[in-house]
Length: 172
Image (tube, rainbow, N blue to C red; front, side, top):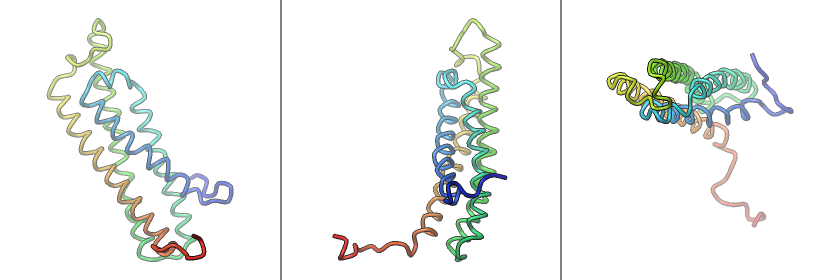
């Protein structure tokens, strides 16, 4: 499905950075675009494109993570991280679908009133804007919280016995 090693480094530890950046960034962009039509008019097709790249990055990262899981010692922390990681894809699918819907509604509204170039605020019905903003906020916060939970559990799994709270005396 995708690479599992990059220059002999587990690809998961590299790909995870894409997910950690793109999913919250997409969530923020989605919420801003849903709330402010002027932001949506500036983003345009970039909003669903960004959401699509975030969506593609999740299965690639998960696949590389499943490979890595088979190559590290199993413990409760690794299993917890894996379980949480498996729960991200539905959130990112929802993020992509919401981004595509927001883009489509604003694009359709802009086409109906071509004389109002760039000014789409009055062309999307207020109930639709409120629903889009509420849905975007729920999906965006859910996706962001899930990314945080996964990252926190991954850090604990990777570093739980790999450092000391006190410095080594011979390393000043």
